[in-house]
Amino acid sequence: MLTGIRVLDFTVYFPGPVATGRLAAMGAEVVKVEPPKGDPARHAGEQSGGIGILFSANNRGKKSVRIDLKQEAGRRLALRLAERADVLLESFRPGVMDKLGLGYEQVSAVNPGIVYGSLTGFGRTGPLSRLASHDLNYQALSGLLSLLTADGSPGLPAVQLVDLVGGLAASERILAALMERGKTGRGSRLDISMLDEAFRLLHTHREIQAVSGSGRGLSLLSGGAVAYGVYETKDGGHVALAAVEPVFWRRFCEAVGRPDWISHGWSPQTKDNPVYRELCELFRERTRAEWASLGLRVDCCLSPVLEVGELFRYPPFSEQPPRVPEASLPPAPAVPGQDAETVLREWLGEEEADIRRFRDEGAFGTTG
Image 1 (cartoon, rainbow, N blue to C red):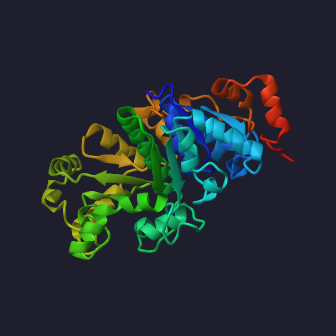
Image 2: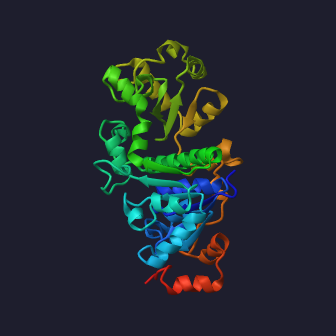
Image 3: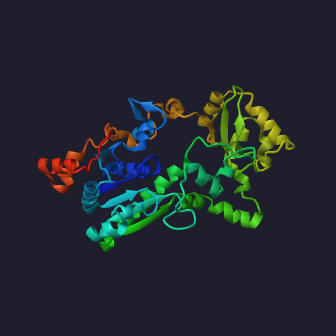
């Protein structure tokens, strides 16, 4: 879909690489510009083969060039690459790329068709734009963190949801800008704020809150109906019952021999509700696997709550696992800058002597 589209990726860690990784999975040629010591994600968290899994999981199918943007030769090289790119995505704090001579004005002056994206925590302007921040901050400020709990006390999420959503939003905006360029021939300046994207996720919650006073969203989907909830099983596992439509609740009730519950599916999940108490007791009579089997036999929106990685052992997916296009891409670059010569030849038409000159001038920096 994106064959022939060149993406110059100045991002590090998680959200930006998610965005450009999705573009790579759609066929774009992504060149990752790494600092002399590489993307810090190479050295963060759990490692495999000496490389951070955070890096290797989110940079598949990309080429790597190592550029020292503190050196004039490095900045000159980066600008020449930007001149040949269709898309540039960066995640520096606002103003940094301008100071480096690689801001939108400088790049668009030599490449008017560039789709130039800035993926930041709080946007390019505003009272928080200069502050450091991470996924947990965006979840906290947006209101999302207050909802990711069952007991009313916010905990530490094990999924960096806003980092992922920010990456999705960036790739979405880039694709839209490429479509617009195809019609007008003009590039675009994209200002993508992680907090904005987190805030957008809760627009329905805010509208409900304005009417009901509750920020928990649809009451039907947040504890207001026994037909829609998470229940513990006999073996300590859990199942998710989402029989929110009457037809599915009816099927569930009939399958478990409790037709008397059919008219009570939208009663609350409270201890003083006898149907809720009886339903909890029922789920504790069978194991998670037994309930999972029922969910496959009876179309009633009943699924096991699986751990990470268990889906591949769940019968429906054991032979046909979920499709993850990024998984079919070549491995992430093992060494920062390993593709420099290839990229400089293919993008800039440079010969070996020119590449050696860039190296002598310090464009690639040193790793020491």
